[in-house]
Amino acid sequence: MTRGNEKRRFCLIGPTYPYRGGISHYNTCLIRELAAAGEVRAINFTRLYPGFLFPGKTQFDESARPLKADSTRLIDSINPLTWIRAGVRAARFEPDLVLVQWWHPFFAPAMFTICSVMKLVRRARVVFICHNVLPHEKSLVDRFLAALAFSVSDGFLVQSREDRDKLLRIRANAPVLVHPHPIYDFFGTGSLTREAARAKIGSPDGPLLLFFGYVRGYKGLSYLIEAMPLIRERVPAKLLVVGEFYEDTAPYTELVERLGLAEAVRFENRYVANEEVEGFFVASDLVILPYVSATQSGIVQIAVAMNRPVVVTDVGGLGEAVSPEKTGFVVPPRDPAAIARAVVRFFEEGWAARMAPWFEGERKRFSWKAMAEAIDEIARLVEKR
Image (cartoon, rainbow, N blue to C red; front, side, top):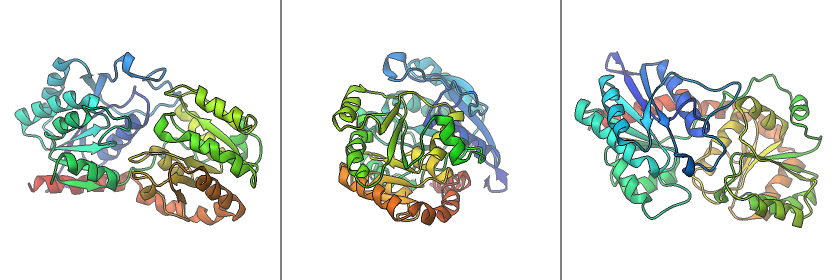
């Protein structure tokens, strides 16, 4: 990845280890990919969320096999002096391109300040990589804060057409490129068999469905639970719900009891360490994302990496990440009957074997190399302006 005859110098702003979760994993994978093609400096956080704003048990990755990349921890999300310091430090690296991970307006003042300082000191070109242009749970100030942060960006890389449209409503005529979320292929060893995986997670034989990731209302888990009696009329499937609840568990456990699903639904209410992720995906036959809203999802990209078909709802960029009848099925949101029909069809018509050959091509489409090429494209676009 070059600018003229010279390698580009990249500065990445966002969380990486010791922080856990999808944004940290994404940023770390990107740091590694770009480091193979250019010079990279990563500016990380000393404090990501204040404790009272974080709904989970810990913000830190306690995995035995954490995903790491070199970074300099400078940014305290609630200390403006650290924002200025981070901007000056990043500018001294003299980057050709600054890549900012954007996922929530809470970070708008910090990102605005850091990028403004870099532009003042270095006149750096900035590209925001948007995971969510606006958050799923919206507040009245979100749009204002997003507009503030976006005002310092020279271009944008978004991961769904829906997010592109949202972005252009906030920053009209901005240079924007749509590129899908890359795969998360670092969880798997490739050596775990389905039988060994089921023994590892303590799951019985038979059709097994997986809902994976933290639980919030917009993930639509209740619609999947409501689909289970319809599914089990035809297929004796069981459901694993694996992920930390960021809201009250009672409505979900009460729904399971009311529908008589106590023996068919198992909850693993916890954040899953990196080394455990492969077991849940390999053990499962089908991954379900019953979301009622979305931009994109790293869960689909874990499934692709693990050769696991998916059923997703047609919201945000989820449908864009699935090749229908090749890597999964796309169904309407808020429709338990549609979820049930797709699941029953998958098992009764033997779609696991029919879909298996398509995953190799999808892994190339969603590779980190392809993401690096997209960054090169948006970099060239903003350099011309």
